[in-house]
Length: 209
Image 1 (tube, rainbow, N blue to C red):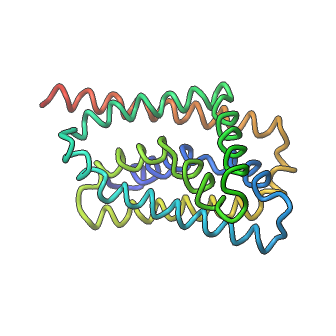
Image 2 (cartoon, helix red, strand yellow):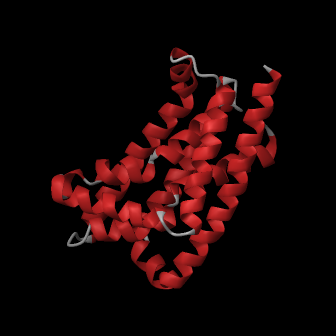
């Protein structure tokens, strides 16, 4: 995948599957009672862990698939279906409810000092959708130079996520419930279109095998 359009599509796919704006209110709920400095520590730690998880899958995900005898086109088809399901949930606001349930379980089990790792980094930031997207996109970045570009794109997405966490209170106040709902649906439609493209590319590659 080369050129501005390819890089931009990779960026949009990863950013939408991570969905920082939807995670903002959950970050506020998980860090309730913390001061600004403590929230900042949780935000940076969760973003760093999420980055290493996604970058790791982008770099070695294809190798892991080959161990199990799974071809990249087959994973592209499966990943396209998974991303479409996530997009469907975003459009009908089911994904946010599932994230809220994950957040509530974490507070009771692991308490405050572990929430950066679970559930913020995993599975809210680096969830199945974002991991699948990382592996899928990595298939279009064959050389190590191009993979370094992909890692850079992942880094940009996680920096944006970190900034959203830091500004969560302000963003939540500006958007409001209606604004978040509209934005989530629009992003869901974009992700659905990208998922269909992944699926179509995978089918074409399987037929060509």
